[in-house]
Length: 175
Image (cartoon, one colour):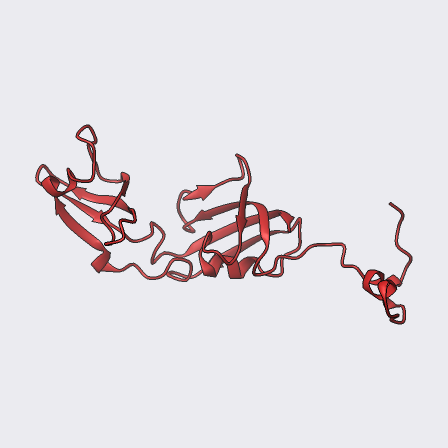
């Protein structure tokens, strides 16, 4: 592939195929519907990463289809392929405020309907409960925030809800 002549995109516009191929942007930019391959890390400013793909395989996701929180997608719009960036989002901006009504204390007898008998929940455990969140049967993710022999307190908020978030990204590919 040859190099492009200086000022090639400043040439007078022509019609037809020549106009369509004259000024091609050779660097892809993230759009609201882009398919991305990227490395990313989400963490509270003073805490351990909640998700970190930098030491593993990169993530592939499509923007605009709720694979990533809208506030995080907004950070990516306009970045060029190859870009590396850090975004510091204020408390609640990435995953909304922490909602105390999404914290529920459930008797262990109720949880037995949703979990196998050999599962023993302890504080800090993440759990996926099929059929508990809605009448549609969708599963619900929760974090165990307290537990005793009779009941378990589950927080159905996103683990980073109500927290400031640091979002580090490296855009590897844009389609």
